[in-house]
Image 1 (tube, rainbow, N blue to C red):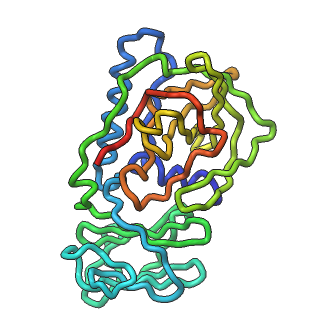
Image 2: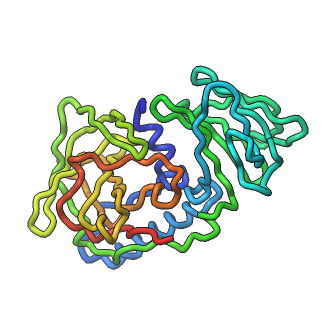
Image 3: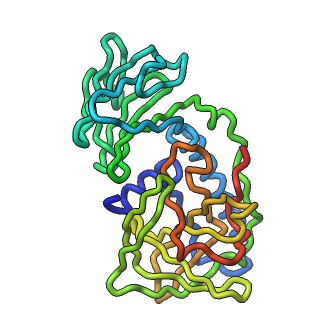
Length: 299
């Protein structure tokens, strides 16, 4: 992976950052729980949008040459039955470049305009193309040396059967002001993902804090001007998502950083098997329980 910018586009909720809760709340401020619950409601609403992770319904790795797409079983990319013709077109892949050619007579659009042929730039380009047909849309993603077609379906089973998010009660005890120790210069760190790849990112330092008397350390990566913590704790065994959770924080100020675990949330892989989530690096697998934030999604 070339930089954290791609992760910013794909691992925020519905492709858009949710705001962090202000670190300026005083202890016991009655407005604090309400602010957290508002943030949580916004997260759930983002998931349910047309661009939310609940609509991600397929991932197809491209092979050299022609990759046909349609509802017919003989296609390389088999789309949901009843949602499109037996064939809507072909993804022609060669050396990292993907050209989509629509089947004659099939009305495929991009940015609201009818297209017959279009180059499908991947998400790593910063301006990926999206093609649509009815409730379906497709884009190209790049992961390591692989390129694939990501399918979104506005009528996906994940979206139709979504049962809502589960959260721990808001608890100010899990809003920590941690000491931040900067790296000079910033270090390159290895982040594994669910595909079995390891990707290099930049870490500006690490946060040190105490929970129930235990010293904890978490190492973030730089992400869109923020600190992104990919972590796992002992609640991941039964209560929270087993692969780990995400937490964002504002940049450190005066050597301190606010870690608000009430805003810890599940990665996209907890809602769809077609996401390509990063996993907590070894140094972020905590030997302590953090019963705060989002619980495991049951579906």
